[in-house]
Amino acid sequence: MIHTSAPTRAGHGTMPSAATGQPVRNVLTYGAFDGLTVDHAQWLRRLSRLGSDLIVGCTTDDFCSYLGTPVHTPFKTRRAMLESCRFVSRVIAVDGWEQRWSDIVNHDISILVLPEGARQELEGLDAIVQVLEIPTAWPVPKSDYPRAALTA
Image: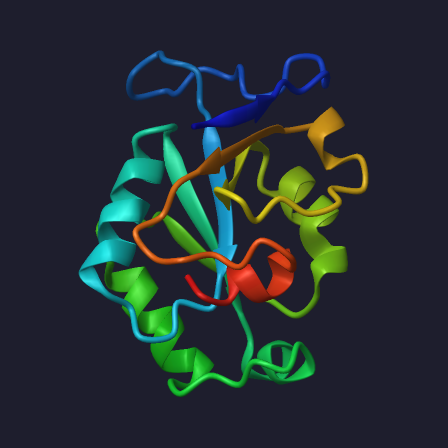
């Protein structure tokens, strides 16, 4: 099941691409991507097909520790692995959930993708961006989206 919320921001995601003339639709997702697997790559491929560019917010080591979910692979390595994935256009560091609003605005995001069942309080974000929940091949805890995001 894919849950959607339509954005109300006028003109959002409608600037045509110079190369194709098609509307640019930037897609954003978040996660730690500790132990990147084929399932993660296939999920990222699916997300990349939703728009023109896929931007991945990768949680920093400090933020993962703050959330109580330390990672095994250092941030620099996780970031490099994501940057080498052909489906990912850009990787940004995530130091806290309060930056979501600025990420959406600064990167002209049209679609925010969350793992299915991991929906959290969006603090009005669904008023400016289309929110999709898309199933993953890995289990996502239902109770706590920030921790669920770290399982990616």
